[in-house]
Image (cartoon, one colour):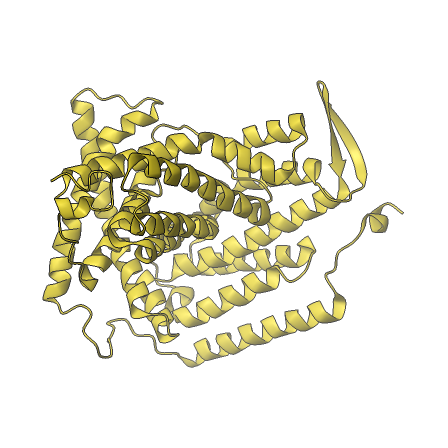
Amino acid sequence: MYVPKDTVLHRLNAKSKLAIAVAASVSSVLFYNPLPAFFIFLACLPLAAIGRVLIAFLKRYAIIVSLMIVIIVFQSFFYAFEHHVIGSIALGPITLQLRYEGVWKAFWLITIISAFMGWISILFMTTHPGDLFAALHDLKLPYLAGFIVLSALQMVPMMQRALNLCIEAQRSRGLEIGRNPLKLVPIAIPLTVGALERINKMSWSLEGRAFGSTGNKTSLRSTELRRVDRVLIVASAIFLGAMIVLRVALGSLYLPYEAFFP
Amino acid sequence: MTAEIPISRSYAVSFVVVGIALNIVASRLATLTGIPGIYLDLMGTFLTALILGPWWAAATGFFTNILNGIMFGPIGIPFAIVNVAFGLLTGYAAEHGWTKTWIKTAVVFVLSCFIVSFTASIIVVFVFGGATGSPQDIIVFALLSATGWGMFWSVFIADIAGKPIDMIIEYAVAFAILRALPGEYRLKTPYGKKK
């Protein structure tokens, strides 16, 4: 997802962006009301523009639009718990009831999913994975976990090339996949055998570089916090704290059926 | 009798890395058929479970979804639980000899279909309100409106109906490969005793 650019957002330390994303995502689920989560989601759009990733961001978001529509349909018409009916639609022999509590839950769900996806996407789009895992390593994430993810990140394009080769080779032998899932087997087997060969090569090269030796690991990527990063981390913590206080003081902000249909 | 594979830490880590990449690339391969319910995103996890055991398999499953999130969008991250559950189940089954005969393997197969669909349905229902954004949603809609079942059971039935086909491919590929590998790789499979 990373979109390499030279912007203020890209230059921020991964830890400060992580703090902002966590504070925003957690805040969005604190209330059982779609509005706070919606505003939290809206707040990430100007940031996407500042980071010059708005187009890529919107393309990512468009992928989940169908998911949102299905959530609205499922929750609005099939909400299983105690509910009030606010309308009905006849579909041939079936009559679907529009349920107030379901509509409320649907909008709450799509706004928290949007907020979560929005802020995590901004983090991934503007932070190089190496920077992200160097920052997480500083936050006591085991070195091995970061190493596995970063290595796999490099391995995927290689395997993708191997997959394309397997597909082309099998097609040249007359294999037509069509809609038959069992036709995937002749492609999956050479792909996996190739993968096992890669394991041997990789483990030899790791052994050759003394992988697993003890001692403090250094990183090429700087994870030093600047003043602006510190300010953003503190601001994120204050924002999250304030939202928790509001949650305790105001409750879940749920508006029952009677608030709209007295 | 063949000796166990001497597994160094670097070998295990390499296996996990390649297993993750295999999961991701195989799931891209599955999209070629366009058939709902075919994911192939557990192949690397299953191979890791058979060769390295449950915890390395769980790590493969977990990091597959994290990496998927980093590369293609964070929607898939919650489904890491499914991959972890599958890795632990098949890993422990392999460790306790439940993948050494075809009959026991069939039991593990049925259990893994059940566990994968069950955990996936929990996430689909409680995190995504029952929607997956895939053609499978049409089946869920039909079940909800025609049968009167609850959201969880509709999602679960729609998912598990197609799961055996997906799992058969994952199992078939893994066993076909292990059969062709040296004896030490086959110890936990029905081919284990053949040299």
